[in-house]
Length: 318
Image (cartoon, rainbow, N blue to C red; front, side):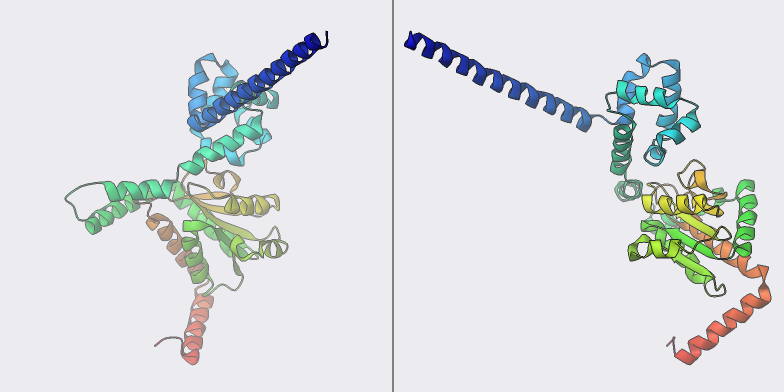
């Protein structure tokens, strides 16, 4: 009897071990499948694979996302619903039917997608690997000239004049940008500071951004420069000043870019094709400097002369 009981217990233990092994193995397989799913698929490919099975409302939402995927990481579910005229419940249901836990996970996946697609590096790689007989310098000059020829438009002229009005009429001017766009922002700040007293450069790199933001008033104005891939730091500053009621001038590459959507006016200055050159945005910056300086010529010339005097007294130049 005792032997029989021991045999039964032994079988039960073996069955439990087998069950535990089977459960663990099944979970590992599921995790591996889930991992492969997210590694091998992105938001756009998942939408395309499931597009035919979507409802009319879901297709409307999917079309917007495919055309504006770079905006998704910056849009709350409420903002996405407002732009697409789709209910929050429908958006949540849409993301879950695509295999996500909800909008937050879907949004993170979209951010991962655009993070992989580094536009400056892609354009630079294309320029380096492209073969041709034309020498590099001549080609870059030609591409930049072509880019400048496409820059001028009635929309830019109209928004440019509005921007000059906002800059000359504000209490204090703030300028912000990040990464490669920062070079344009700093140049604009440096040149305007030559004859404008109340100009400040906002950047998160110094760690004192919150100290500067606390003194902002609605009579102030912000110039924000941001290009694809759009940085969160610049977007956050634009959002903050937008909430404060401050006018925002966006220098960017699209009217649907994250900062353009929150801007008072947009100065569209796209990059030169295949070069990721800032020649267009630098041209816009130079035009702003000249136009703002001309609004009060006497004061501008007086400040510039004073700058020259200080430079000579200080022995700034060799």
